[in-house]
Image 1: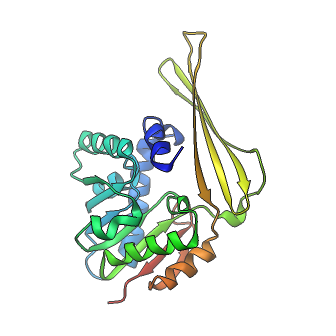
Image 2 (image 1 turned 30 degrees about the vertical axis):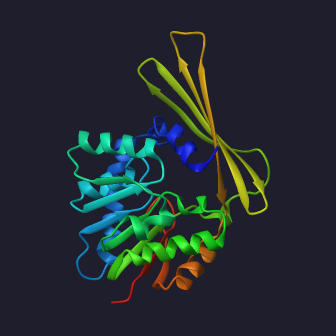
Length: 252
């Protein structure tokens, strides 16, 4: 399953990863606003979200008053993001675009470029990540900042069959059991995402399994690549978001 197919299949279930997706949208929007307010020099109103998924961060930022443009490589995720944004009265310009192609796809410059929720490690080599970082920098105005959030892979175990439980979600008469299994091969790993949908009025549960690939790149290596891409004032921020936040600026 390629990455686009993975997220197309995941998009109807993505909110179930969170215990409370609605609350997470508001919390993450507020947390990102605080980071942007501190790290973007000058105006900070125009935001580009280059891996928006179903809209968790882009909707949150729009609710905080930002002018948000958002893209994702998954057409299914974009379709759902549009629905979720419209149902909340958010005017966000959504489109389908691989983050490697954002320099050509997005023609304006932005005050901040956001790539959140461990999206960039879907790129499986330093070369691809560097290319994406350069593309993000190209879409920043002078003084703007790139904001990346990702897992701290230095704290993650390596091996096969690593279980990552997400828990149980109940919606009406339907109970969802959700977990991931990680299988490492060197510094890359395959994620198998499992959703078991149990209609408690039926004896026949429905299961969904989807798979994708990640590069377990360290935050130190990502910071190094950000510097190589030409970002200035590169730093890691902890305890400001649910994942480590990496920030770099385009010199004014």
